[in-house]
Image 1 (spheres, helix red, strand yellow):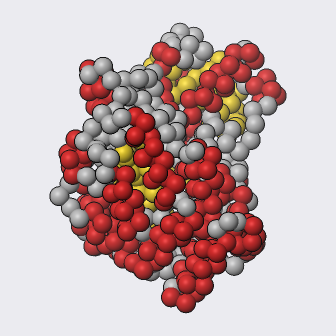
Image 2: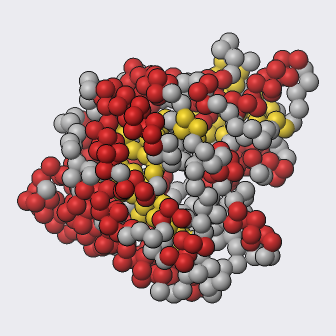
Length: 492
């Protein structure tokens, strides 16, 4: 059996880092973790190939080779999925699909032959068994959640890792919170199901043994969902593993209450974490109450962010406008918070209602749904009728994006971060890749770029006040170039 695993293309967005990748000579940000994990569940005797459309094209020869095409996708890859299905139908190749996009919307993809829905650890074995017996069904789904202690190590050898900027692993699935705009609990449950620390170390070893020495993203919905195990077992194991592993750093997603636990933050830093993504969403308490984001309520969010930064963790933030309780003052409030917090990489989006979320169901009952979610953070659209006038909402959104990603304000945020940020160590080896990144940043940002004054000002300021952070200053400058390109393209 020849299986072609195809990862659909992401549309160009803030988090695609397309324009930053050229500085470091990479083609895509991360490989498809879910698809590589599914590959490891397929029979060992099957022949497998991976085509990641974010770094290469789909050739006719590959489709002729394949008996089956396996696709895994999220909603932001919908357009590419449709194109892949059409290509497969033209080539006469059967399509097997799974992943978040299809769980609640599989009836919209008529060209797919078989759906492996929910968690593949549970549904894929039934498909494989019935395929062997010649009585395969179209849809395999379950309402149960798997024990991820049985999840295999991803089949990394299918991916050409030298073309990726980062790797991904998963320690847990599920989130203990119930934000109404999020469908994570529908997909993966509201408790944190964890792997053993031995599994995690084994996966890290597998990456290290194939030569990976860069950043690794723990893709958990909330890494600190099981604080006790994280603090007493996993992080001590990671600290021990890191002792002789130069060059590896970690980043992940957590909730804001990380700021309450100084010991936890210090253990994460010792283990090699240098960044966390946190859903700040909004500084408006009424809107936090509206969306059920109770973990963010009754807090000084600004001080929480700074506390995390002082512990040695950069904070990347998610922000949302368009809640029913939002007034026009929210635009300036979001700008002020982002600038004062020093959250350099701030992903701001209009509120959308994903299928399967509590928000989607509420808006459906209210007759306010307009269709499917937009495809990316800078779509400047929403899939429901907001309470605020839509034109006002969209123009306010554009105002935020233009402001926070203008060179002056972006570079000022880097300085604000550096005044608080106290990393325990900075690993920036002198190698060809890093030297090339520096030279390209000097050329594109320091000579050609309209941001050149702010670029050189930042490097001089950093060399005087925070010389250890010069490598980070260059990296964040490169990210800023990507963000500005996206905003210029999408926000008119």
